[in-house]
Amino acid sequence: MLPSSSNGGTNPPKKKLRQHRATEPDSTPKPTYHPGNALTRRLLIYRVLRIFPLRLTLYEIALGWRCARRHFERLEFLGDRILDGILGLWLYQRLPRASEGKLSLLRSWLGSRHILDQMYNRIGIDTLTNPNWVRTLGKHARGNILEALIGAIYLDRGWKRTYRLVSHWYQQHGPSIYESVHTIPFNFKGKLFEWAQRKQWTIHFETVEKAEPHSQRPYFHATLFINGEPVSEGTGHRKKEAEENAARRWYTIALGFSSSSSSSHQQE
Image (cartoon, rainbow, N blue to C red; front, side, top):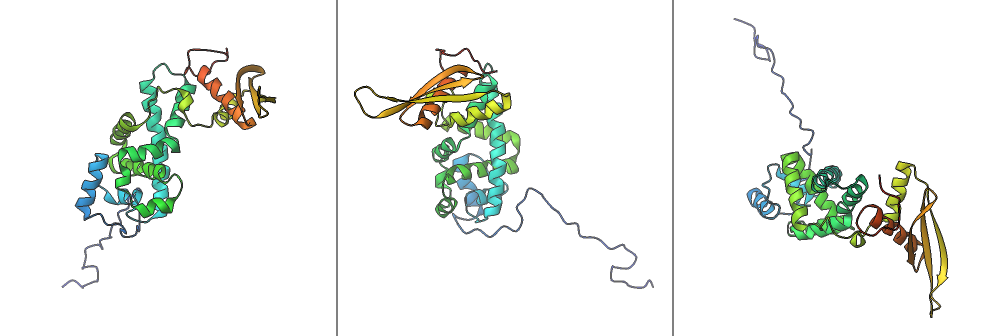
């Protein structure tokens, strides 16, 4: 008789294989917001987002059904990067003649918190989200939740499904990409300085204070110079406002949002 052993005789001990999925949140807390059982929660999400969750935990974290701040922030980070890629490809395909400058501006605008907050409500995500989660996240919670959902959908279904869904959201609920740049709530001066650094432009403003006719209230007149050439002007009751309007006017002309032109300086 063969001697007995703890590992079952002559058979080698079987090692337990530890399965690990890098994309699966670990040690997430139990749900604190209960809109029904697991199937009901999946159907609720499908009714609004038009996608049936396979990995429900990801969506529960994004919507605040599980209070897991660290995992939420990781999903938000991922969703922000995925959204940037989706918008870049979507705009590239829809605007084949647009310059790099116009594509970059529109991508930044469409991915801004102002637009994401609006789309959150238009899609109907507010009907899914734990109200306490919105209060916990504070300012721009809606846009952050939308980005976290995009990250969850990407991990659950992959790039193709996420691209189709998000591009559909923008077509149905987003602003028209052909709207005038005058309607864009955007930091044009800040963006202009970013481009200047990248393209090695020299940029400065010359701003003077003037008096309005028949009024004692002063206003400011700003002239924007790029590489030493005056390219745009703007006015405002504050110096910052006048310079922002000058930068906005340059975008309007140089990036092709307006048929008129007061500058020969064109975006590369």
